[in-house]
Length: 92
Image: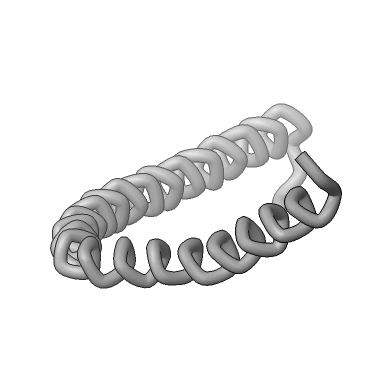
């Protein structure tokens, strides 16, 4: 095979690839558009339910944290009160 035949073959191949790759890409995009839209809608619905469950768990955790903080404050108050009783000092 002569060098000019190889050169023509390479140029032809480059033109074909340069034209066919975008054509195949656009064709694929248009053919799968509906499927991708449906998948996004389904995932969106699932994301809302996951978000709702996550919000409920977060609310529960916040409530538990507030209860723990209240319990710790009570324990600190009791310990301080007992310390004052043992030392015989008045807080006022």
